[in-house]
Image 1 (cartoon, rainbow, N blue to C red):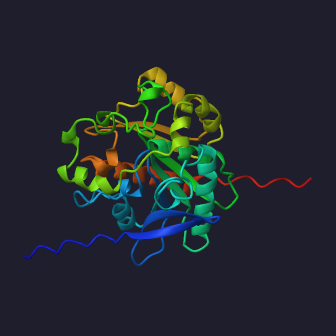
Image 2 (spheres, helix red, strand yellow; image 1 turned 135 degrees about the horizontal axis):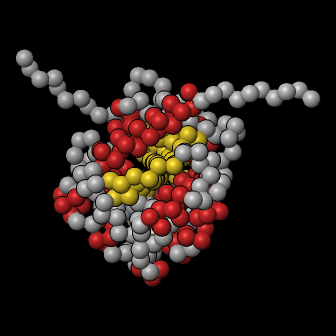
Image 3 (cartoon, rainbow, N blue to C red; image 1 turned 45 degrees about the horizontal axis):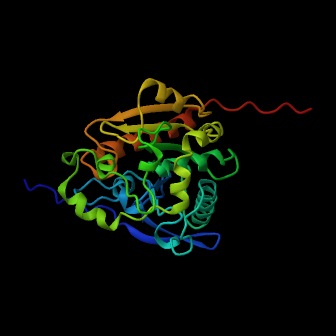
Length: 303
């Protein structure tokens, strides 16, 4: 009996989002022959671009194709100051302004595309800061439909000195970004040449203030959150005190802190990418299940 032909993965398209007149470049993958169950919004870290989530080093490593195969629309966005917006924002934007820009871009996207249950943000490193800031400004019942957050490579207590953080003219120690090279397919390093980008100056200046900014932002996050630390994560402390500081300020109804074995900081470019992406999408499924099985809210009694 002949083996079935390998299935062609869903295609990835380059698109441009309109954020109230500011162009944001993005990659888009759509589920075939059915409306999406939700929209997975992928937000890259510092010094990277949207292609971070679309690794083609091996079949199955791309979050975009995996998510589309499982019935989700996946939208990987170049953050403000990267890609198409870089020429318009040569210094980048503050975290608060990035959140406002991304909110406008997603609102525009929602006007022309089916959204399913809403947006679920998968974010990496500095992109996790943006995901949390976006969630902090989210108001339930406003129609924006934020389902939850899945964040990798972000803590609240840096394991490096501020002058070691990446910024203009400071790419950061490559080993902290990657960890042991055996954790990545050899092809990943060639492909990442089109993914790497300079860190905008405003983003770099604000990075050292993240531990002070985090508690106020976390206190306004009202959706489920999952954090993942790579086994070889070298940017953030992961001791019990550090994890308690990460968890304690969150107003989220459900918080998960996980560790990914056999991975360095750039999880989505490594051998562990498919494993991590499946776990992230499983957390999305858990968020959707919790919504579907939640007890109905009691109607208000008229005065």
